[in-house]
Length: 336
Image (cartoon, rainbow, N blue to C red; front, side, top):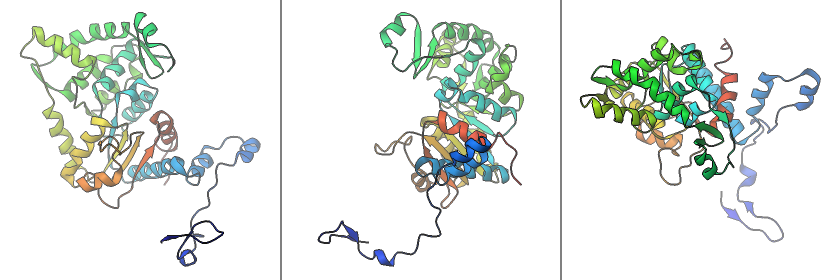
């Protein structure tokens, strides 16, 4: 329709009278808080209202529907998550998924490995986005957003890692290293909060395409100073994830954040001509051409996601959107 102007009126669209009626589409309407006051909070009604709230609430509603389709179809589910998801309370959701065998493979970054272990040793704490960096530095406190991580956590991690590294074979796949960490975590008091522990226990591979990009990589680097023959073989992870993709009758992905954790899953699924279902939750935008910000339709052009398949990107902080998605999907029995 062409935009025109008429004297004394706002701009109008030519052919407006020819547009089909929109009466078949749902009206925009939010959650009924009056009913809430009378009968108490109703999670099912709240989730249902997301679909007609608009903006990213409607996209989150679509994501919930897609995840439940994955569940009904018994899809092979690839979970991708950046390290900040493990820094945050989303770690407990990831551990729940691994404990109950609700995902088939987890892909994360170096921080997503080391921080899961560290939290079994010492907790992270809620801080402030506004805390002065210089003051925190002088007191040995690192800041991840509004989460504080004291330096001593890494001293504990170093002590924990040394016997694990000593027991590994000369050449080890990253997923084998992560399984060894999950098995070692089992000796710690807080191990049941660890997704690495549950993944190891339930034979769910945890892949880390960039293991050197963090404290984990630093410790591997220092270990190699005395053990020059030691090699972490990331190519074995690619062999594994491609085989998982190729052998999946139906394949779905839930990706929290972006970067390598997102692309590694998508790239592996090119070999099977794309994912059957996909849910992205991130705040990255496409304007700089980054894969992190790339939307669903761009992935279709690469063969990473099949055309006309259930898929959505939720533009939202995953610490808000993912707990809501979990409450409406994996945390409850699947509707028949």
